[in-house]
Image (cartoon, rainbow, N blue to C red):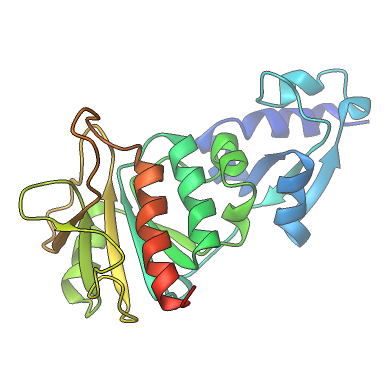
Length: 231
């Protein structure tokens, strides 16, 4: 059975402040726990606490949950990838988690620029646990701007605006094997970073205002991955 102290710790991990203090994340579900691997420090289920539904965050409690050490990646882990995503002020944890999962699928690294906390349980679930194995780091807007100003990587801005290069299978420059950075903003505010780069866009029916940001990232990453891996 969980002790009162353990239950208090678990409940504190529902908040970003609590996660930062403990350097632990609450992980829910078998798949996510498997992805966390050796980072898992404790597993517990309904049989371990009569407050199990209160300790977990989903409307329908999982069959098992656990505590895991928050992963620690370095910038070098991210820049080892040929494709780097800069997520600019994405606050929806579902989108952030889905994009982390996409980065895992298409071999990309991620820089989180003032985004939803990657330790949020919804981010972990939406990433299907990929947040433990996909390299990511958190950087402020200033840090990102300074780093981008110094990098030699080709920079793209995923935004549908006049003059944007249309993404398709013939976009030879975007699909090259050179190391690239793709900056992605939220659907509501777009890219906030004042960084120059080639605008790229995914054309679609004008009756649709915009694509979901995770859907747009999926298309962009697939096009690049398809060419680099000669699918």
